[in-house]
Image 1 (cartoon, helix red, strand yellow):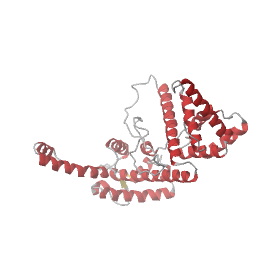
Image 2 (cartoon, helix red, strand yellow):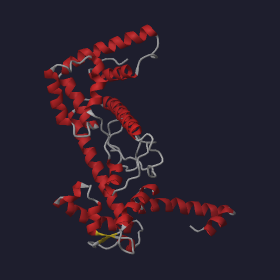
Image 3 (cartoon, helix red, strand yellow):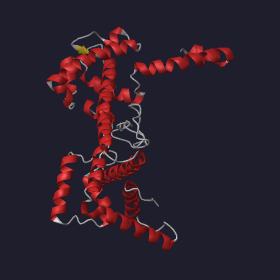
Image 4 (cartoon, one colour):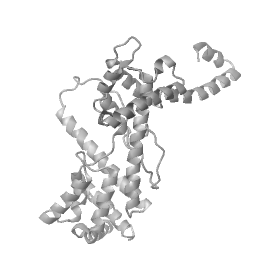
Length: 344
């Protein structure tokens, strides 16, 4: 669409309608051409890619492309390398099908890699990751006894814990960098990807790389490597085990007893990795506590909820509860929901 076409359409309704219809058709095509990434996202990757480019046409050698992806461990195995070569060829065809010029797409099995196919290649990587995450969550949910409504409640609680963990991390980083303002490099808002797994009804939702419901408004430093850029779309929400323990601590669980501590640590070691618990693991921990009545948690949960309910009735208001108490009441309500008791 040229400036002349826009100017001409501004003075004639029929021309304007035709232009609007043309744009309506063109926008999805342009989106597909760039693998549905936003401009700020693919331009960020283009800057990283250009650092490795040593050819006049802006392409990089296959060897440099593999080095660029050194942080992506999956592609540096024998099977991963074979998948990468096949996926690159598929990405070249996908780019051409979406309107990318043959020169920008490159040829199959070429020793050079162009930028536009890389966008479509990354789309494949992100979709593959999201499918794996969704399959894991589906498998865990099918093995647990929670209802769809309870899963939705636990998800909301998990997201709250994750948000508090992120805020705590940000505050800690802020303290460390205090006084160094102005020395930091420029920042580019790159949406932090999250796994798109199940909605509140417990059904699998559509995969969407740009879906960032839980992290909106957060600004990450501009990624400086391919690994950092990719991680912003494949990051899985996790919370440290310590935060879960703080959540249930007000219930009065005897975690100071050696046998209880050993039992809990053994289960946490089974469910967590270095970064903590993801949502499926969080659900598995909750179910394990319930099924084994860990530290008499069912009786303590009911007792704690009754105490909190009486306190609210006596005060005539929910105001005055501190944040930890509010979280505990919310948490206890999930336990009671699981045991098919009435929720206040």
